[in-house]
Image (cartoon, rainbow, N blue to C red; front, side, top):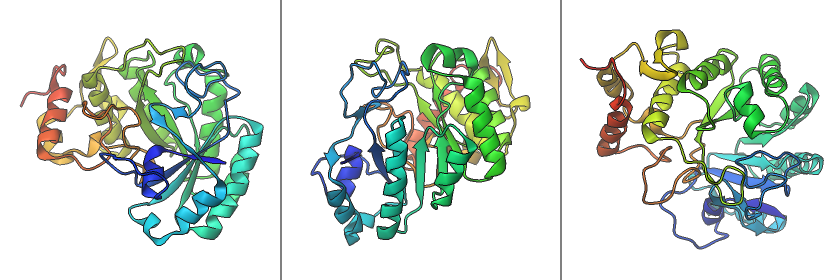
Length: 321
């Protein structure tokens, strides 16, 4: 069996559901209940959340044959740009996904990325030698202290493996960072700079409380907080500015070194769209339909652009022209 995100099941014709935005990546989940115990994750070892959840997205189960038949149907490729395997952290799942990658490659020419928990450079190499486009090692936390409070294991070991992998396999490594686990804006932006300096692609998430997890009662980050980090991420990712160009006060961003009005004209809605691998839009992964979107899965309207930049400006001290 294999789990598909609900939106992916819609695109593949496996489910008839109404969605506001279709995914441009086919998101697949392999494995059951993680060996780790991350405080925010529905798949954590001691989580009481529904087994079919990852963040707020439900992942219905399908047979592998059913999935492959749907994937190879001509209409299934409409809008899909990538296939992404989300691998629950256990030995069996990592081995299973290697087999699945080979099977999917026989049926599809779409690039494949794998978000997994390889523990060594050799395991990263094995995945890339299969023809995987990107391997993602989820860091999630911006600092060792935040990592220790919300995840298992060592932040330093995880970061070292990520950076060494990026050096050995340039252009093929990615990670996730979650805004709102308790880090300051300064700490998050500094971590972003370190990762991009080493050639790691970053997918930025907003913390999302899920019922049944240890952090179910923790609030999501304020939208103004997330927007400021998104703009910093966009500038760093596109080499338009660096961490050293920004100003912080008590850990909060107060200036990008460029006025928000100029940035709005130059960057438009790009900073607020979903980040990560090319073709990844993750509709409603962090959001509730009908509410403000942390990550927009499609290009923003002029009204949405204006609103997002107003949120950026809300607490910036040095952005007036």
